[in-house]
Amino acid sequence: MSQAGAGVTPEIAIVTGASRGAGRGIALGLAARGMTVYITGRSTREGEARGWDGTPLPGTVHGAAAEIDCAGGKGIAVVCDHSDDAQTAALFQQVQEEQGRLGILVNNAAFIHSQLIEQKPLAW
Image (cartoon, rainbow, N blue to C red; front, side, top):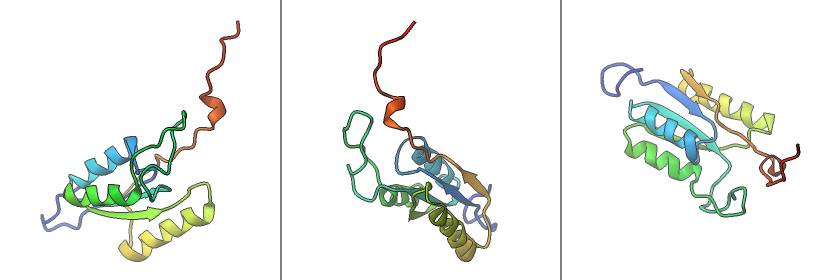
């Protein structure tokens, strides 16, 4: 990876699921290296995503892209539901058309079904 302005083209990255949490943190780390970071997520309005207990979650793809810009990189928000193959393909097509290459892919998008986190009695 190179620092922006060092005469070398900055790396291009995609970080999926970067509206919040680990994905957002990874994207910010890449931004600090001067990278162009495409961040994906489904959240476009604060609080529209809900946690396992129904509480609103912070973070949007647009907010994360703005933070990337402030951290020294270039943030590009892409609203994408990675359970839809056509949306995922369109993301990679966009990066190819705009950048001509991809240096790093961080596949962080996840969906945790509510049944996996329900409180249940321990059965012996």
